Amino acid sequence: MKTLTATMARNNLTRLMKRALDGEDIGIVYGATGEVVALRPVKVYSQDWACLEYGFTDAELKRAFRGIRKLAKNEKAAKWDGTLKGLRD
Image 1 (cartoon, rainbow, N blue to C red):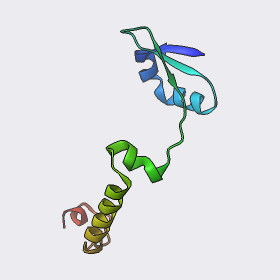
Image 2 (cartoon, helix red, strand yellow):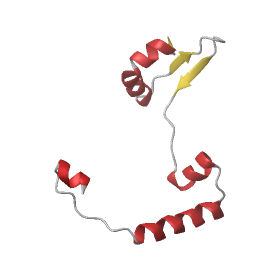
Image 3 (cartoon, rainbow, N blue to C red):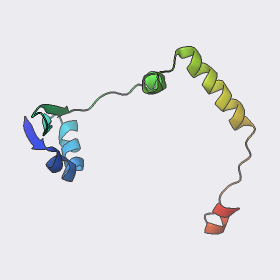
């Protein structure tokens, strides 16, 4: 396992993430305790992300989704012409 300090990991994060995605074990040493934290890829499932992230129940998530869809349905949008003026209008 490759181990690094937090500063070294921060300075090389993109390269380290690529190595972790390629299957290499990467450890970052937490300076206060000397414990090692692993940098590993994880699978994220969008179906339960909001529940896990915000602590929603399934019923609360469905109610929020319906409310957002209702609000979005009433929104009006114009196609952006690619200019700065178009952003301000």
